[in-house]
Image (cartoon, rainbow over all chains, first blue to last red; front, top):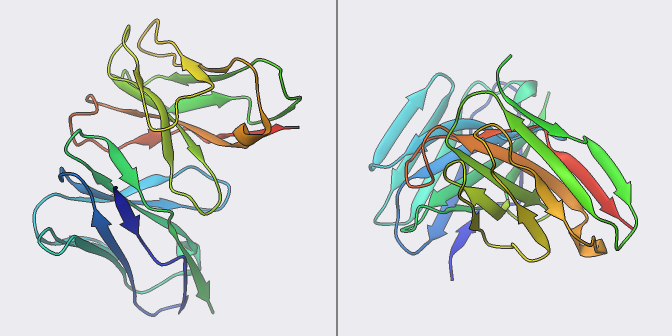
Length: 109
Length: 115
């Protein structure tokens, strides 16, 4: 079956750096997405990786290794507003999105 | 502000009742989707539509139906609600069809409780 694994919850300190990992086993691969979802709100798009390597966008970066079935989202200079769930999703060979359950990130002062 | 509008925001209904969740987008996106989100699980696709006039089944379509009469509207109907359909429902759209890699834009969600 298809599977996306992410840690359920992580805690980090304001101003620090945190890395959220995502491993996947899917039938084919057509890209990996990261979304941010604040409690009670809709998910919003953060990043997209289809080739191996690092994509940087401000304080957020996303890395992909297709051979390892692995991605991470790196958040730098953490702010309290970064407290949210981070969802990893992979597009499979049928172009269907398979979603992880999300990682709840708690930022402490 | 352009985007996706869902209604109602929240609803409690009795088991066995019929319910339609409304979704409207004004971005002229081709593809639209309905997901449900349950605690501890990833978003699960219920139904999708790649373009007006076409629909397809997702991962968990049983008990739900959709229609896509035009580009903007994509209602989701529960013909006879059951307690296991208690969930948060998100409508989403993307510029291309599901075969393309575009990001999804989500509505604010509809919280449905079936008693």
